[in-house]
Image 1 (cartoon, rainbow, N blue to C red):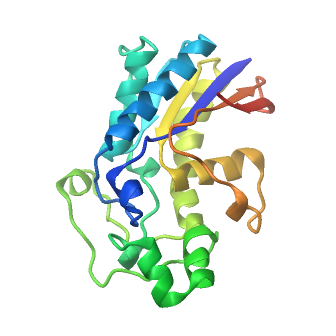
Image 2: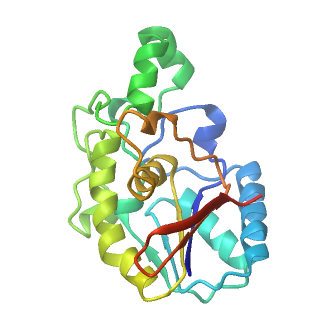
Length: 223
């Protein structure tokens, strides 16, 4: 029985301020650091030995991953960073306070932008450029729906994570709320209209156990 643990990063500065973040690089708060340590301790209690850890290009996930690895005494693990695990890009909502947006557009529209599967948020007028993405030939999105995030997450799962699980190698993923929701949608076969009900709390590890064909045998939140 092979195991996968997925973890959303600890509280970020943007989480604390209740603003849309997406691909913007923000730090963990002190609370987020503490949450990452607690997540690591919860994972250590499972005594799972991982073969690889996968995270995004964003430091709130990278820092959380490093703290978790330190807590589980597996700092030596190969750590793979990919833009495909980046948070969903919230377009022109980026940097805006969610409550202020709600005041302008209403609760229903805000909910649609945040939680729906196919609806794309208001797009940026101009594409951003950052060296980290220019170096690998990736164009930063002008904005993404959850479906668009799912479309970039799934190839990474198929090419880099699933084969390792099939070979019996336990995997650890430390990423973001939306990209982990996209992965959960795929793994749990959540319908398009039900995915809005799925929430991934900060730094609360989720353990999946699979058979040799990657059929889910068990899933639980580590507490």
